Image: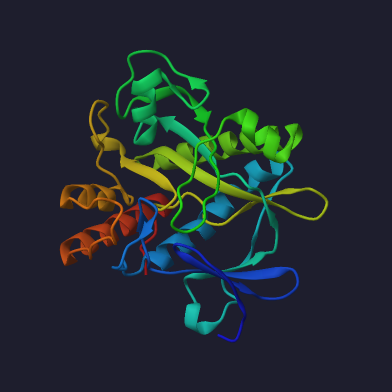
Length: 285
């Protein structure tokens, strides 16, 4: 491609496609514990892109109800060499917050809950365990870290400091509304949407715009509903499988990460494809 490269993230490259447009290209790279792993997952970029495109359509009415939009312009009008894993999107001023919604207790949320009975500034009932459904979905934002750095959980008050009262409330309310719709659609496909993160930008005029990827196995925890059982780590259709393998390998999270074995690569690809096919009801191709 002849387009100028603007940025390279853990998984995506962003290209300048004109004064008001960007080309967002998803690679097959996979990251874990703030490291990009040396082994790619075949077709991962295509799954992330095609699933995001599908979700933008599913969520359009929720966005409209909140006076918001999404950034997708086209997934077809892209260079041939990145077709299937690229989106032409609107250029935005990105909000400096990752907007996380949790409907179930898992991962770092469980660790924090066990320590102080809360996740960030959200106090939760006693007696919850790994995999428990929360009484109501909660909003637990974080900072947006550069490649190789760690996202840091922040309080709602801190988001007010960063973006102001009005935008902080809009980000929170829209995040929870999108999570609820996503969880409803996932449940109909026999998938539990445990948690997810969204990113938003601001268009000219101040309109909030849903950006980046949406409800993918990279940005969400997807659990098979049939096996959901609170009290233990849940089987999943996301990159938790890779995180678990890395932990079992003895990697210290400081040195360069190890290559993934072929069977781990194949099993990870299968999980990503299964998430796509079960959610959308269509074969991945």
